[in-house]
Image 1 (cartoon, rainbow, N blue to C red):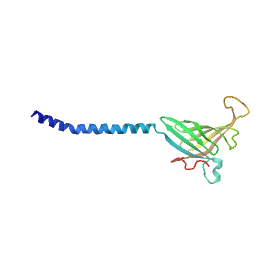
Image 2: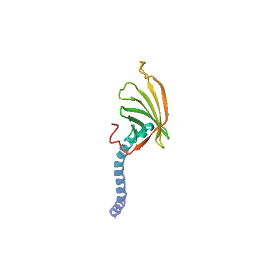
Image 3: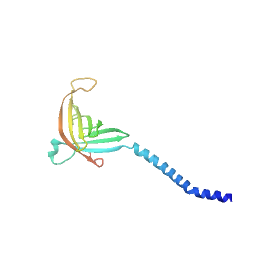
Length: 167
């Protein structure tokens, strides 16, 4: 009689045991997936055109900005016909600031420190450029003068990495 009572109790607990086992297996598979997705880099590409070149009609990008987000940090790369450099980046809820030291021409004789201030809502940007003074030999770069351009151009967000980066 007692054996029969014990077997009924075990049979009654089988669905509970099965449910706990199923939950444990799900957690075993979900936990690594969560770790992988939390550590993954989120990549965003922007194709940008300067305002003064919009009248060309071809609408090819003057430069690209690649944004990489990982675990709360943000990195950027700036790519154009003469440069492919890492850019320092800061972000606020309304703007993205990208700063890079660039060669403005293929001759690579002078450097220009350029700051792009991109409005996140309409993706229009302003930029500020300061030229490097190559006559002074100092440990740190000495940037002189500069120009600020409001409404310098606009960017558009791309769904994927561009097939053909700047030629």
